[in-house]
Image (cartoon, rainbow, N blue to C red; front, side, top):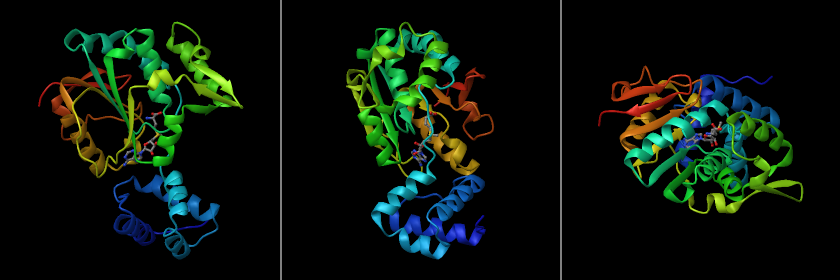
Length: 272
Ligand SMILES: C[S@@+](CC[C@H](N)C(=O)[O-])C[C@H]1O[C@@H](n2cnc3c(N)ncnc32)[C@H](O)[C@@H]1O
């Protein structure tokens, strides 16, 4: 196995930051290092040759794809989606007729389609404005296409059954050339946009922000910064959902939220 030290990692992050304007300086060191080593092995590179190769736009895209972990599922953690449907969305509807949702780090869009299906089954899809963002433009294109490997649909269907949806996941896609092509009307009003949580600003106010399994790749300083952005992006009494292995108990703005559901990691903003 190839090995690299902190100085190598710094050289790589510095170059990407100055030449390509992506800032991985505050990504969690151990997983970032693992991914760099994987890239070196995959492409049979040294750190020096990696640095040279990063000037090729096509390689830079492949590099970003490897660095940003894109693993996702529809209705991942089905009980989370049940709580959204049964508790959180009805609570938002008590005060707002139109709901605004931000999926931050939406990857290939499975989470966005899950939300759209949930909202359609509640018959409120037309009342919701959704923005779905990610750092990685390639993965956003996949999200927009809504075409998924059929082999992944078994797991997605199992999650949907555990979510206790009203129909079958098959109601929402067609099999075309070996792909599961999702019903595009589900995301007709979704705006898919490139947005970098590290460098990007606040662009709107939301009732619900989902950022699940993204901050797990950031160090605590960066998580703190990003959580401040989510706090600012939420209306007062808006909800923040993070991944099952993540928490905001320790962060600077923790006292501005209350825990709504600890198991599902759902928080509510109570102070500006
Ligand atoms: C593991 S996926 C999570 C997908 C989905 N939220 C879920 O839980 O299934 C992490 C996503 O975060 C994105 N990401 C990583 N760093 C980011 C950043 N700085 N800004 C925006 N998105 C980022 C990656 O491109 C990737 O698509």
